[in-house]
Each structure stands twice: as structure tokens, then as C-alpha cells.
Image (cartoon, rainbow, N blue to C red):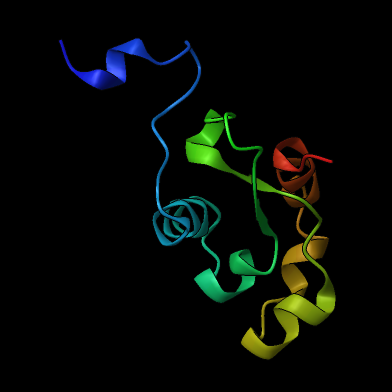
Length: 87
């Protein structure tokens, strides 16, 4: 049995920040540089989502350098982001 089987259900082994950012960026179809500004580590023993979390909503200022500011007006897009943000 692998070590990943001993994790709490709904968690995953700790991953690198870069791996987490890449996964979220691909899922949301955003540049990794945008996601990097939104990510923070979880508490030391909290391995949910690989030990990382999204801590704030993306802003127009985050998206403007990439010409993606219209994304914030897209139906459902803010809802998706809110669903993964944690305080």
C-alpha cells in the first residue's frame, strides 16, 4: 500500500507550490503568474489541496497585463473563483 492511502479522505499529499499553481491555472485557463498572486500555504499539518489554498479573488489589475480583464464579467466566472477562495 502506498503512502498516499494513509492520507485523510479528501486530501492529497503535499505538492510543490509550482505544481499547485500549474494545476489551478490550467483548470481556470489563466496564466500561472496570476494564480501565484492568490496562493498561500496551509497550516503545517493541513494537506488539503496539496497544502496550498487560494486566499483572495482575482482583480482587474491582476488580469489587465494579460488582456483578460473581461473574464471578470463572464457569467459564472466569479462564482467559480469564490468557490475555491478560503480565508
